[in-house]
Amino acid sequence: MSLEDRAKATAKNIEGKAQEALGNVTGDPEDKAEGKAKQAESQVRHGIEDVKDNVKKNID
Image (tube, rainbow, N blue to C red; front, side, top):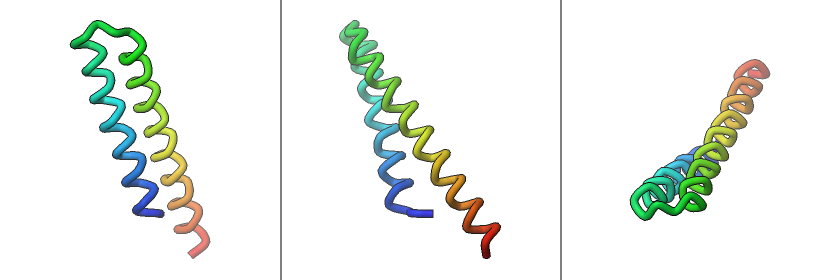
């Protein structure tokens, strides 16, 4: 597991939530959609790190 990669994924999730909230406040559907996309990307990144952790654990 790369702590740095996990931190980047968490930051991307926070960024996405903030952008989605901004889109809700301003009524901008583009910001809202981009925020949701960033959150989805963060989930994928976390999933990849989980797979890496499981593979490493099984090898050790």
